Image (cartoon, rainbow, N blue to C red; front, top):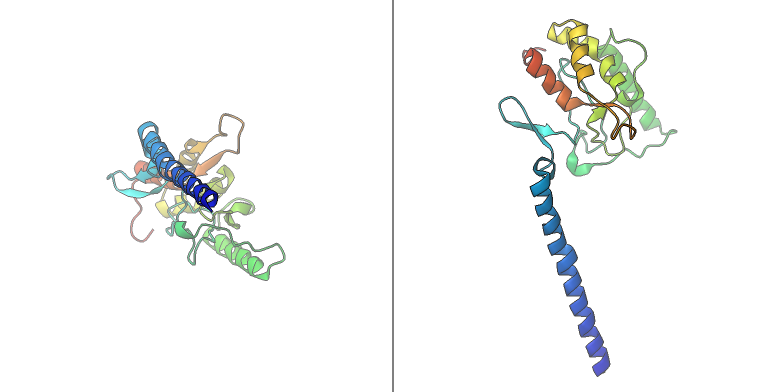
Length: 201
């Protein structure tokens, strides 16, 4: 009996030490180190506008309802989409009628809103990402939206296109991933260069 009690005491002590080290000390040390070395990233990669107000995170997609702004991928995160507290995909398979209906609705909406867009609609503008919060689109998806954004802002497509081309991020380390455009940063770049669109835009 004494041996059992002694073994139980050792187990409890080890559990407590492990809990304190891995559940408290290690996370605090890593958080402090990240705050010291990468303060912006440690605080969520928050993005501010020209007035210094936080308008979002460079890591989390968000909805842009105005035709004067580039649109991100659709989102299945939460009831209205882009809910960071409900990150996830729709998990609908290729034979799902609900998925087909949603893609068809997106297709109809995009064609109506982008009558001057060149060629077919890029697939990522019809499909959600696995997280539902992807802040990036491909350069092709951004360039496809240029005619709509230019028309809504009263600009030539060439001027808007030049902003898109400047905002393209290449592959990580030159070979990882694909070139991409951060939608929030692209829309902020538009506002910086051409001003914010009017209320009716």
